[in-house]
Length: 110
Length: 114
Image 1: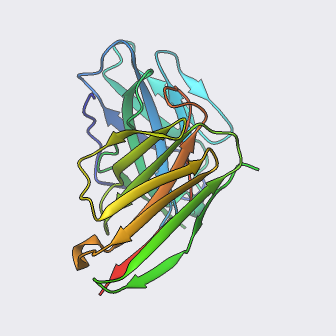
Image 2 (image 1 turned 30 degrees about the vertical axis):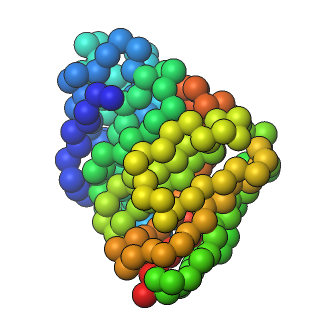
């Protein structure tokens, strides 16, 4: 699996956009970028995934650079409930294993 | 129903005990997973079941014994555990084993080994 690099922690003011970066410079052509988050003492929750194109759903937007070596997860209007550890994962489409890295601890500040 | 249900939520056991963790999903998913998560660490994959057959074992010690009795149910049998096995055990499922979609996680079973 391609390795990912994320900042260990970030702060974001409530109501502002949270932009979480992820570097995956060794990503292969058939590998997808996934984002999960884990709120304290809960199971991880899927947020979004993409291959090449930018993606948006009701939770977030995923921006993937043209060379696919990095991506950004955007939470458009962060709330206190968005405080969590956010994991960026790269995985081939036809592969069973989902391997979590160390993630970014996002703290949303009132 | 989009839930993965894990029981018990908390378990305390001695090193000589035998206990089991249970995971259930009714989404018709054909792949189920066990992860282990130590405090302040990311989840680590332990086992993957595909169509009720064990497809991945990440070199987990034999004191952890998984079982998939049917497509909705996944058990993790625990025997002769060590205090360092204390952790949050997470179950997950996905629609198909080889799939580009999401994993659905349960809330976890928090295990303490005395």
